[in-house]
Amino acid sequence: MKYIKKLSRYGTGVGLGALLAVGLGGCQQRDSQEQSSTQTQEKNAFVVIEEVKPGRYKIAEEFPAKETRIILKKLDGTEKVLTREEMDALVKKEAAKIDNGTSPLTSPQGAQMAQQGGLSLGEAILASAAGAIIGSWIGSRLFNNPNYRQTRRSGYKTPAAYNRSVNSFKKASSTRSRSATRRTGFFGGTRGGSGARSGFFGG
Image (cartoon, rainbow, N blue to C red; front, side, top):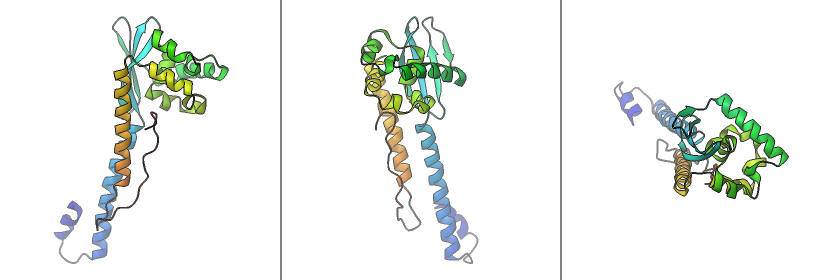
């Protein structure tokens, strides 16, 4: 361990207690940095939403990222990065429809509508992994709704895009779990950490 090797250059005057304290502190700092990095990646998403018909959209690609960002690809070939203000406004508008029961996201027919014609931009945002972050305040009104789970799956441009997204977020969650439980001490002992928690995809 580099922290112990560094101490050895200062002679034998360093007591075992100080050696242990510095050695364990170095391990804890490294593990803490690794956990922080994986937690940040798991909690954010980079999403590409593509316009498939005028005013209708599908999720083309998404994966874990250090910050939440949504790229909008329009029919005319132009691209735009949505601002947080734009995302919040679209989600707020869609949340009102969820509250009054008119949102396709929570409708029994929503999946079929999404499959055939795509989603509105607000619906596509809430169907994406970014929706769990931006629209987290909506809570069980959306994310525990079985109709929503079916609709959001149909909101991806292809089944392959959906599967890639699921796998990438499950991998990020698994990495975080391993980092949280890997707490190796000076004598090789392992301190128990928190296990994997259910993520946006139920992984």
